[in-house]
Length: 113
Length: 117
Image (cartoon, rainbow over all chains, first blue to last red; front, side):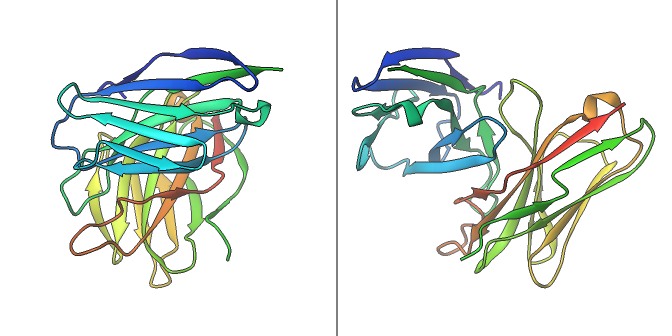
């Protein structure tokens, strides 16, 4: 995922908010995604945002998109121990008719009780 | 509703051998994408299949090939296995998109862990 960068590790206390950040390089990307991966499992689609939006909220999750700076963030409110996982940011880098997702390296979120 | 399923779960092969991995897409989904995830890395796009044809390919050599069947299930074939092919292989299926958009909403299966010795 050389085109998408994330910090590798974030540690928070249970009940706090977590903010995971991501930068991407392709300004023509139409969709940007957040996926969650628990140990030994596949990827779970948490949410995605269309590039003409700057914010999307879904229960405890808030996605912010700054298209000018090519910066995407995921905020998890009231973080729980069950939120401990690796979080991947991804951009859709294909043409409009190819869903080629480019992933970052993932951010490991550790939630301390 | 059944999600994306993959088989087998784990596989051990020897260098030079060939392997076939299988994926059943989620009900109502018509597009399948395959990714390779090396340990500690994000997934890398191998290719996508739509209407039984390859619809985009990543930076993988021709020994990585695939098929999609009329029921939208798919296979990933890897010939002449190399040690670096050891990874988690993930399949994702997508519902029919709006207009010409294909495969932008991807739901992943649990993956097949391939070890090449």
